[in-house]
Image (cartoon, rainbow, N blue to C red):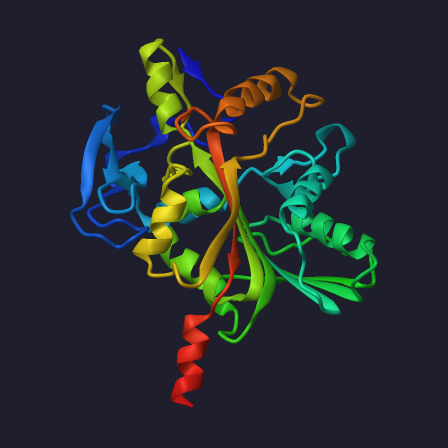
Length: 324
């Protein structure tokens, strides 16, 4: 029995010649550090593996870059408000709900006239734009500037003169001296072959005192549990190639030597992607699974995790100042 709420690519379309072997962790950089877990599929043969250093769960074979780029050129974004036909290119249902959620987490916001937001992998920027609107509604800021980094080159149109929204791709195209007060990477790191590199780049782009928000799948424990019940949970492979546990978000900071720069503000089971209005049964199921995880970290069947860091030091810029 197959359980899936959204199919990305039929597994039968994956061919052996489209795959490459993975021997280095794209998160922490450790070589030959993978421990084989269980068989994911037989033809072509692919296994789940776990990095002994940072704890990330991934696969021992992934799509080669050319094939992966081809897959993402056909990316199917979720329509934020399907019944209203807004056509927003995002991966979340209810942009205003998402904005309220982030506003509750990010307290206090920086005391300044303008807030700069970097939306990494945010589709057309609708989610970060909703956050920008919420920030402006506080009456404490003159303007919000949003930069969206995504495959899509058509960002949403700003309806507010005090909110600007521009597009950039790839992340490396941003000037090294750019600094942002809020960095959002919602449901994006799990797609990247080397998320550790982008994680470090995002930290460098965050202003001192700024926030970094991440949301990603944490589904492997649930996958194993459902397998025992004779149900196969869709892991969204080959688009989702990483699964990050609750402890990974703390370990990766140490592995990348960023523990002196980042402080965890809050983390826990991620906000449910679907609403009861649009997907009643899926939303009920997700909330029931996440509830124990909000009480104890020993409960691993949450489906997804989110974390908010605050940048409390900037070692790289301090080193540059010392050299000067």
